[in-house]
Image (tube, rainbow, N blue to C red):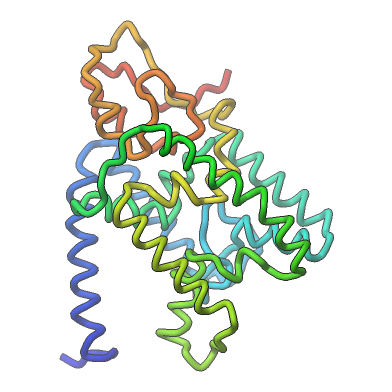
Length: 291
C-alpha cells in the first residue's frame, strides 16, 4: 500500500479517525442523537463540497471560514466584515435577513445540528478529554465574551480597514489556513497575521479539548448572532413540569450546562436534544411550535 502523504501523515490520520469513531460511538446512541449525527454529517459534506457545487454565494448558518478551498458558502462574519469594508447596504440586509429567517425558525439549533466545529467539539467531548465545567459566576460572565467579540468586529474592521477578525480567526486557521498549507502549499503566502492566527488556534484547540463546547460557550460570534432568537424561535425546547421526576438527568448531560429543566429558552441552548433523549417521562420535548 502506498501512502499519498508523508510517513507521519498516515499514523496521525489513523489516530484522528480512531478518536472520531470512539467519540461518535459514545455520543450518538440515543434516537435523537442518531438523527443529529446524520444531520451533522450531511452538513459537513455540504460545507466542504465546493468541488461539486462551487462557491454559491449563500451564507452558512454556522461558523466556517469562507476562505477554505472546500467552502461552498460564506461565513456570516465574513459577510459582516465585507458589509462594513464596502459600506454595502445590500450585504448588510442580506446578512440580517438570512440570520433573522434562520434564527426565527430554528433559534440556535444550527450550532447543534449543522456546524462542523460543533460536531468536532461533540466528538472530542466524548473521548474523556474535555472536562465538565460547572455553572459558576466566572463561567456565566465568560459566556458574554462572544457577544463582546461580535460587537467589536464591525468597529475593528472600520478602524483598521481590513478583515480584522478573519485575519486572526482561529477557526479560519483550522478550516482554511492549515488545509491550504497541507494540500495547496504553493497557493499560500504567509502574512504578518499568520503567527497570531496559529497562536489563537492553539489556544482554541486547548479550550475545546479541556472544556465541552468551549468554543460555543465563550467565543463563537455566530452563536452570539443566533442566541437571542432562542426566545422566539419556532423550534422550541418545551418542559412539562407535571411529568418531571426531578432526576436531573437533563442537567447532567447538557453540553452547554444551562439551567435545565427550567430555563428551556436559554440563549445558550443549542437545541441538541440530549436532554430530551435522557428524560424518562418525556417531560422535555424538542418541537416546532407554529402558534
